[in-house]
Length: 493
Ligand SMILES: Cc1cc2nc3c(=O)[nH]c(=O)nc-3n(C[C@H](O)[C@H](O)[C@H](O)COP(=O)(O)OP(=O)(O)OC[C@H]3O[C@@H](n4cnc5c(N)ncnc54)[C@H](O)[C@@H]3O)c2cc1C
Image (cartoon, rainbow, N blue to C red):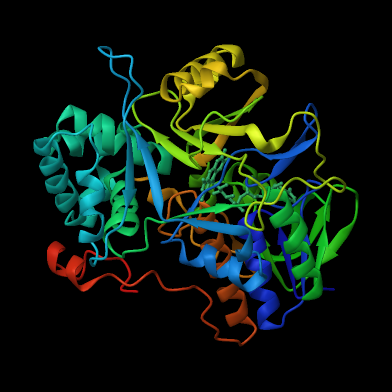
């Protein structure tokens, strides 16, 4: 019998396992699917034979716990840091020339001045609009938490007289990719979190970290090796049917295959929609379980395109004012940083080489999800052709669209009230998942934080007072002064 059973092998469950293994307790991980990674995973595209991600996943410099998790388990080497982003100006009706590509990178000044030049280079905003944006950023950073939780961000922008162009070409662009929701369905607190942690607090917060391998190779491959070598028993295709409770204590889990496994402590790291089905009915109407179902979800779509030739040399781009929001070039020349697909093993090479493989991400994809795959792909390809003339000569060899309908929870006003703490009312049951109380939106960072917090509670119950949660990036002295208040930061770092 293990000390702890973790149910769910997404990033929350994996982080809990890693942290618990480090404290020396024995752990069994039960995952219903044949692979780990949960929503951050890959599958084989049957036409190309390649392992492709369900969607490109991006981490940022401010994701301190996710990066710690990667460092500890040795998968950090399979990420590359991007210190330059490329913002493609919106299409214009008056000219056929390709749009401006604005380079977005930091200058050697302390935060929040490090991105001043980058903002000034955004050619599709006027100076007046940039000044309004700077005013908006400052007001947002100074926003009091009480209002921030209950107001939606569209209202806040109107109240702070942000010009339409600034809303459409900046606030919308950044927030929809970060939170996957329209601005009227995002709380001011969630918006503030993105801008303070990502852009204002620390010079490195905004930097983008991209996996250089399919997610499955990271989380199912490399990570499984780490877990098994640290005495974590990983059991795939081991769906849990229900938790068995006696005297308000979990004593065991019943698996779908009829097995029953006992442990001292349990972590339920399943999606929020699944949690109640594991619990006896008597708990469904009790807080916090009766609130969890009220969390709403938002869809994300990804369009995968294989061309017969390169369409751009850019590694990625933020596409402003279009259906397509981010383009990721997954076809870089093979290098130790970005290896070619393996000839044997999980990834097979084929006539459709990965060399000209591009992924386009559409967050807040409700509208796209209602249209046919063919229509969306045609619009995305037309947009790429409008940006990169090389694409006009390229032949589209293969394409597909994937829609994750419940990709992330919607960070609506007051949604924080619906997110439970990791310590559940059942003493030996921890909850983990990006949807639990982490202070973060639905991200890999949020999932890892929840797993670390659950592990911290369990370690404490075993008499090991080990701090596991990692601090945020330190907030620069200039940002503190600019915002004018220490208390507006959740964590000092
Ligand atoms: C399309 C898409 C794009 C995204 N892009 C980004 C991004 O760019 N950056 C970012 O940081 N985040 C991104 N996210 C969010 C990120 O993937 C999630 O926040 C994170 O992976 C959630 O991890 P989790 O462990 O909380 O949940 P999950 O990944 O959902 O893991 C839950 C696990 O529990 C398992 N399970 C369920 N029921 C049972 C059961 N009864 N028994 C055993 N196991 C069970 C499931 O199979 C699953 O493996 C994206 C998500 C999606 C869907």
